[in-house]
Length: 375
Image (tube, rainbow, N blue to C red):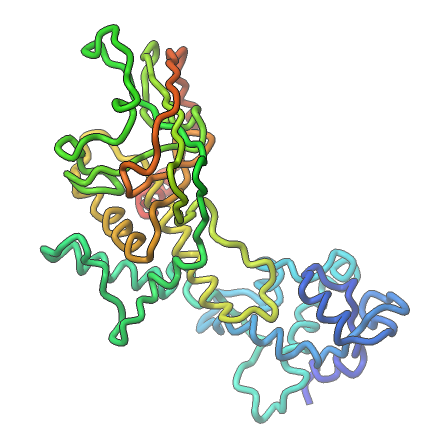
């Protein structure tokens, strides 16, 4: 009989004050009973037996894999670091024994002969660098970049017609209603003379002048905008004393936007359906946001846009009319509408850039390589 079974006998009950996780606390209140806590010494509080928590904790532990070597962490450390499950009240009393507590929860209701996982060893994330969805995205893009394909080249899915990448996008939509205000900037060059831009000049370029960019190919006009005037100004990379026109843009019809500003948050890992899938989907969405927000280096070949152009093919196929993504230049975020006529200019203001600042800090060589890898 293991030491962890003895833990469940010597300290059988745990209470709501031992946890931070709100969903778990709610469940204990619903399923537990009034009693005294064996761990934090709270009295007349909602408690459950350690073994009652076994199934829920194993569902969460399944997102980790036993380490095949000496590199890894205790399962208790991973759960606490990733999900902040246990309260300071519990940790202050039993910080050295949390691993015993977690393994007792995970194994306490199992027959040792039938248990197929030893939770007392070291664990790691199933894949510390890529999720399977990210790997699927990389594989598909690699195939596409090696082929001469049409613009709908990402419109294929699995053998049964199910597209896991498209499905991963489905929960990250936001509705931008008619009248939503965004901003679009354009530098006023000397060749423009003293004439101010018209509303038409601040709109999307005509088809013949639409150059290849991150969300569109040459000859495919789309509308790039920002959430605030400061971000719109920053995104055009104006220089000192440059004059920039900023148009206030009004969305003309309701549109569904893929929101990549921040992946949907998983409030609690407990009692969550398809937890591993949701974690992978969030990692994929974060990856997409980084790819779209990555600044393009001047004179960089247009082929560097191919990845994000394929991404936008996928977003269109998923039924979205545009994408919101982080800005690497300004304080707000960027929005691209696939419908070039999806917003109209209501008014235009002019600004002169007073100063351009580039705060810098020295970085180590390995950090440079890491940034390049992420890009």
